[in-house]
Amino acid sequence: MASFQLRQFHFFKRESLDDLPEAFKQPELLLCSNGGDLIFIADSDGSIHIVNRSFVVRSFVATSEVPGTRITQMLHIHETRTLLTIEENVSTASSRPIIKLWSVDKLLRQTDVQPVTVKYQQPTSTPHPLTAIAATPSISQIALGFAGGHIVLIRGNIAKSKSTKQRTLHVAPEPVTNLHFIADDTGTSTTLFATTTAQTLAFDTSGSKSDPSILEERGCGIGCSLVNDDNELIVARDEAIYVYTTEGRGPCFAFDAPKVLIRRFRHYLLLATAAPSTMAPTMDHSRDDDDDIHLDSTDSRVYSYNDATTFTILDTKNKLVAYTGVVAGGVRGVAIEWGSVFVLGGHGTLDHFSEKDLLEKLDILYRQNLYPLAVKMAQNGNYDLASVAGIYKKYGDWLYSKDDFDTAMSQYMQTIGYVEPSYIIRKYLDAQRLISLASYLQELHTAGMATSDHTTLLLNCYTKLRDEERLNQFIHTQEDYQFDVDTAIHVCRQAGFYDQALYLADKFAKTGMYLKLKVEDQDDIKAALEYMHKLGDSDASVYLAELGRRCLASLPRETTELLVEVCINGMNARVSAVDKNGGGDALRVSVVAAPM
Image: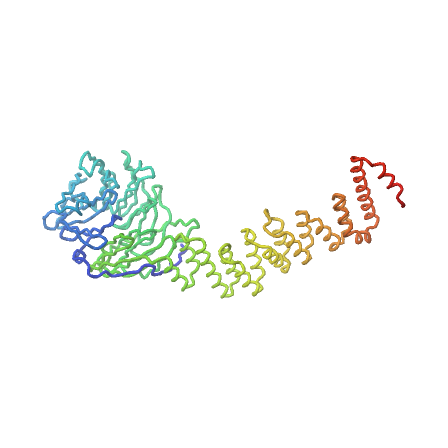
């Protein structure tokens, strides 16, 4: 498999936040957010702290007073402003997980809020820890994944704890690690993605069918999967990040490091790896269609959150590492809120990551002369065309300064319509790089932005290069002929390309120029006389008056015959005109009486 090292940048600003509320300073915190303008923190004492944008904290006790009871999982369903919590007694293996639904609006307004406890049956007589949970936005479906391998689906009016039904979707021989719901565009079909430590699965939960689609016989760890805006499942394994649809596995993004967490921010993937990685991040280019090849992963190592971890922000759109740094004590949680990323460290630290604006990122790339990447980033950032053209100009100028004239011209061509052509033309005229200049001028004509001066210059390039093939191509393949025809004929004639000049003169009915080319340049008197013979008598007489002496010298008999024919036809035409008005006999007498 061919691999290419990803470039690493610091496109995010990292700020360690000081003077944090006491809620952040407690050990073993659990962090949760989901675009609801709030961050939720659960501590080891069973309390939940709601943090707003101003870092004002509102706290409440979310568990019973039984020792060892704590919140082990949280899920904020922002569509219904509901906080789902999992309460377990971590001091005993026989603890039965308790699922509660809290109204966030009530928690913010009231002091004594009673949650809705979700009723369900344990799938086995022996309780197992609840390792994964997912809910639809309407909370009409909740999926539970257990360490014993069971996946349980609860359906109905769950928020009211009424009319619910439960069924076991699947029993795996290994623990369930992640669950995610997605809905189709119509909202009528719901799919549940599930991962275990050994499999990646998909279930249609819309009807009674419960047979799983096995997407791959490999799974991932807890917290190592997510669903993106395209309803694709993203799975992070040690060697790479994989994309799945309900139909199966798609492309992959290779990044070799032991992963313990993956989150998403805009088009970025946020990764926590178990230790500072000495392995270079790579991209998989093993197939032309950007798909991946099957990679075997048999690594069964277990990594702890308590170790120092590397936090990496991957830009999958521009294929680069946008940030990488170490978080002491490990990454305890990641919150994406208020247009930023917050990372909770194991030592009670909270780091704020804010994305630099596009101009700052482009300036970094300019300083490293990474203009192709700058162009790609600007285009992906919806930069306007004029600004993108400005980057191409910078790239062309840099290449030109390195005497890479041809590659520079490829960039300058992207600036047509935005950069004054004379800026580029002067550069290549001074350097006598006529081939590149001709290519640029050709593009100007194709874009309909050429002037007669540009046409003259282009044709002069072709003629000086003696490039008859490109000259013919330019002349013969133009559909709307966005150039000055007289100028083109003059340049071709002056350079001795008579056939091209004749073609244009004939096509655009430039009769005088056509006959001059035949008589004065090619000395083809016979062809000139034949051409004049096809003209009207008045036109033929004009060109005979201008070119007749040269024609008589070469072909006296043929020229005289044409002169006589033109004169007789002209006389007959005048007689016919007089006949119509009367007096025709007098004209004939005068003609007969005229001395010979």
